[in-house]
Length: 120
Image (tube, rainbow, N blue to C red; front, side, top):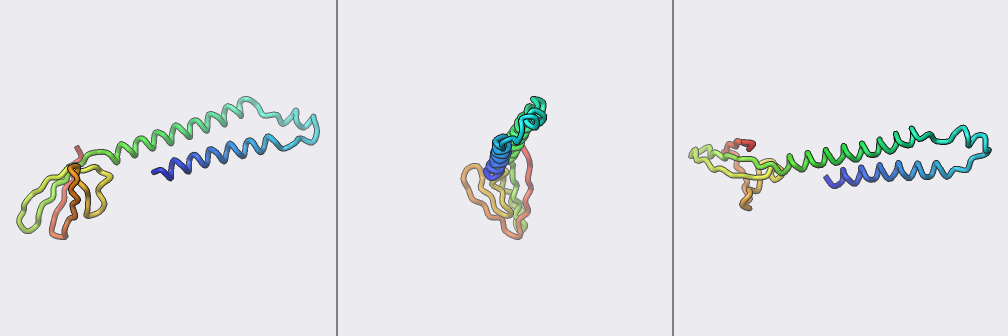
C-alpha cells in the first residue's frame, strides 16, 4: 500500500521535474519564444490533472484502507464433531488458512474444518 503512494508521488515529482527542465531550455530567437509561450489553459490543465491524480489516489487509498479494516465474523465448523467456533477478525488479517482474531488469537485451520465468512 505504501509503495502505491510512493509510486504516485514519484510520478508527480517526475512530471514536475520534466516541466521545470523543459522551461529552462534557452530559446534561439525572440520570435520563436513569443509563439511558443505556454498558455494559461495548458498550465491550469496540467495543474488540474495533477490535482485530479492526487485526489483519485487519496480516494483509492481510503477505500482500500476501509476494506482492510472491516470486521468479519468467521464461523469455523469442525468436520469430525460438528462443533462451531465463532471468531471476529479484520479482513486484512485473513491469509489463506490462518488468521488472527480481534482478541489476539492466532488461528490455523485444518483440512477437516469448514469455514464461513460473514461480513458485518
